[in-house]
Image (cartoon, rainbow, N blue to C red; front, side, top):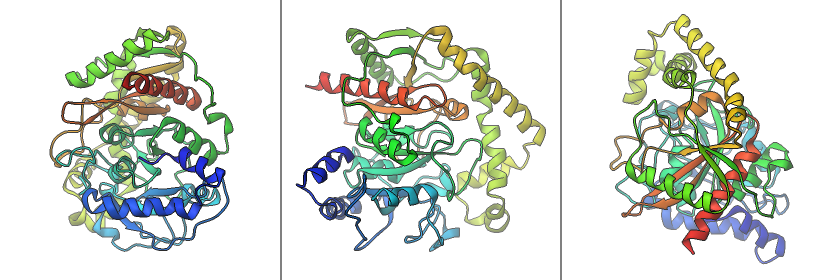
Length: 418
């Protein structure tokens, strides 16, 4: 994989030019893309800025985010060849920082569940996840050092875990969704895929103008960690649970304090209502497409929108009240247990075999609904080479703490691999 920070270090040292750095991505795309199929379109002879804190960094842009110089097709034939007049706000910010939005990455249709043709770089017979399939796979395959993705349920954290990269879902609203095809205005969150935690922290700090989000060069310190298994949903697979246990053992050996946390009933209730909120809003956000192009919608999305027509405003309002109650209680949970972060699984197990499904988001949906920052870190592989991940979760607005804890875990894993 390409590290954003490593590339920038070489550029600042004068051993690599920004144009040469972009050429590395272009060469990797030429080599890997025919097999991985992570990209929808790609720039040819892009303009490469020589200056800027992200000069020389090639970026993949999920294909539900507008780009003025590349089509934005939403993973759907309805928008085949569509050319917006302007970039999404996040894409504009990246250009101002000197980055090159080099390619559009595959997305499931309207960032829902219908799979793409993208292959998992670690095992071709397994899904890369979704909906941000192309962004995760492109970073994992070494084609891009940075890619944008979105999460409404588990569409950043899960594919990042399946593909063995770092996925960052920031606090809700920290990155602008202006210029992004909306699915759920309550849940849609823009995030990042990178090779390492420090890469993600650096990119987020620059994109938001908040240098405090960047990780210090020194040791990130010992976090106070609460382990959550979400006992109210179907248990995870043994390989995932074993990976979490290994991380716990290593963290305790390193001096971190860990304790088990059982989530109060309101969180289980909120978890069960995520779908009501998402589908009610999706029915409105995609009302034109549903009304005029129902036959062109993916089968899974179409069926969900069919069912969503029956969700009443009263059911939605009641669900939102529960979500607001859970959001208000979450800070008390951290305080009561005296923890900095929650540690849980990124996915129920490794990437499922086949391409009929993008995987299960049950370890993601609650945290998306609560709007809190989540960072997934690769922590090992199965016997056949499929990655496994765990995620750190912090209070709303405490993205720096989530990133620091993720970096701590990443360092533990690297030390154990030596």
